[in-house]
Length: 143
Image (cartoon, rainbow, N blue to C red; front, side):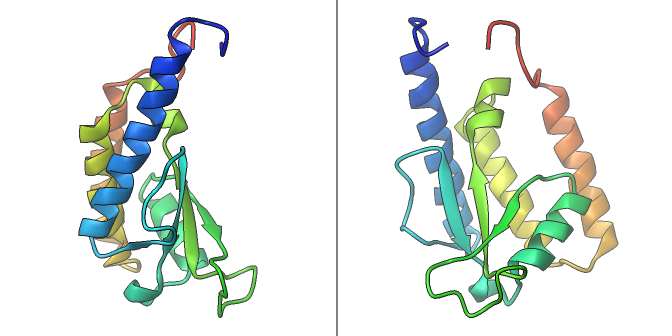
């Protein structure tokens, strides 16, 4: 795929989407450890929300959003708990999503993280995430 002419545009789209996600997460009150991103990944510091990475990952999973708990620099939590989340943009970009969808996803993440124990929120976000994802093909032909 990297040898194909469209790969440069695809790679630029991944970074553009990651930046949109990071910016909107900041608007949601989350801190991106590096202040933003120049690639497809970002590390989110959850301490301002008073939520651990483990709790956040589980809450987001119940809401239909896939992520990974991740340690942050000088993390006060144990490695199996963590104070952060690792998020990326590659799979969403591959499916055809753009910055608008990434901002929507960030808003959904913020909504869940403000109510990690609220199953009604998880159900609502899962429905919204399913509606959003239904508009895109996970692995389009040729990707």
